[in-house]
Image (cartoon, rainbow, N blue to C red; front, side, top):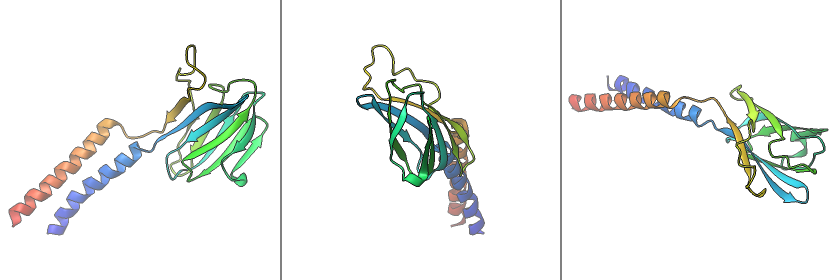
Length: 174
């Protein structure tokens, strides 16, 4: 009989852990910072253990110089960069051109593990504008869909109640 009560205490804890993982799925972020004359370093930050495809479209006149992925995991076709991400947390590439690419690079991603899709960068967050020196990195991102805080609190409450009930029953049996 104790085994059944133990299971009723463990199940809410497992559900809570799964909800927390879903909420912490992450954000795909892009940072752009100047590197050298007319060269910019673009850094894409992803949640760990991601298997995804990313398509980055550069403004006209920009060209990709170097990518941190192995050559068989990316392809450049004109102003479009195709990336195959397998477990990397950060991808860096350099672009060269006369125009500052902050806010001009657009991109989309598809997470093949969860089936989610979104945009990389999305709308500019306003950190690159008047009065802000160009050395300040611009970071924008689109959050993956996750559990709401209310749902997380509810799951944590259920886990707490389940564990408390099991402990109370174990004390009564002893």
